[in-house]
Length: 442
Ligand code: FAD
Image (tube, rainbow, N blue to C red; front, side, top):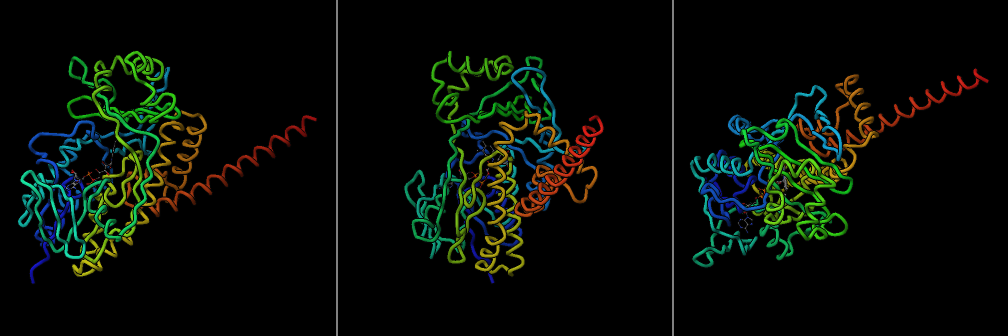
């Protein structure tokens, strides 16, 4: 019996990887992408240029033999370099052994590698300049806007991998088949560049993710293979120190001089970048259900976009791909059963990482520079050394394991209770000791 024809809408990170996985299962797959072929060299200004890939994403790539080539072009970042307003930057390793790293990679190069790998497989084709504008979820007939006008195309299965603003999700909603909740942050993001030094070297340590935590806002910077850094400002949209409030060149320069004094010397084109690059929105998308009629499904950001503060959106999207493939195998390639199982397994994990990513914003922009946070980190590392099988930090569980996110969240809550118990016991012991000493002195 011939396999159903699968249409994947969106040839971004999730769609391109998914096409390869499904082709390996023997499905004829067509990717429909609204943009021109990215391998032609065009890229969207202001979209994040690089991203951090960690164990979950690497695991998905490893299963199809793509991890080696992707890692070959990656820059490992073994910790955070925290830049205070004054003083030397402070390096905080991500793992207890200081060795484990997240990897800075070019979004464009990764997308191209995934597209190349997918389209090299028999049965996969990719069509560009096709923007989905209509879908009948019952019949899987799709309508695309193209340069030559609208076209209708039929498939057996339609998978929406078309990102946070998913048109497939929009069509499911328009047909009353799904509900969505979009929670925007009062923050936006803007990218800037720290170029390579005149002698060609990196202007900052390339083995760290750099953070300038400033309480209610922050900037981060990730290294690129051309020895530049891509910086991202995460600032409030309105109010003091916001994108809205800084209007004139003098105000922008003045804000950097006061809050990010080391940056203007590192980024000579700061003002031009600031003026030219757009402010992107940040938000969490929650959807339910993720599938309809056993033939339409959502994957990646289309199902569950999250804020970027754990560097997990793409990693999570790649885990979705692995899980959908696993469900198809377990369900004998019966799509209705596989899509339902995939959603039931992934939705609690998507909710968990959405919550942890929001939490991490507060940690990155505020806590990482505080003495209380650093003392807590030291206590946590002590327990990790003492009980390595029992106690692991949330960062390590999220970034260096494939333990399901919801399980990580539960484990970390239990660990924090233990830590609070230990702190209370230590506190009580100290109090007993102090009061004993006081009694003896009286
Ligand atoms: P996308 O990458 O958005 O791809 C969707 C594709 O669908 C695009 O090619 C788009 O053109 C196409 N499309 C859209 N609409 C249509 C349509 N109607 N018809 C046809 N095609 C369409 N994640 C990490 O893991 N690590 C990080 O460090 C990280 N950093 C980030 C930093 C920032 C500032 C942001 C905003 C996000 C970051 N992310 C990170 C998240 C990551 O970018 C996303 O989770 C990931 O791109 C999701 O992949 P996707 O394929 O689901 O969606």
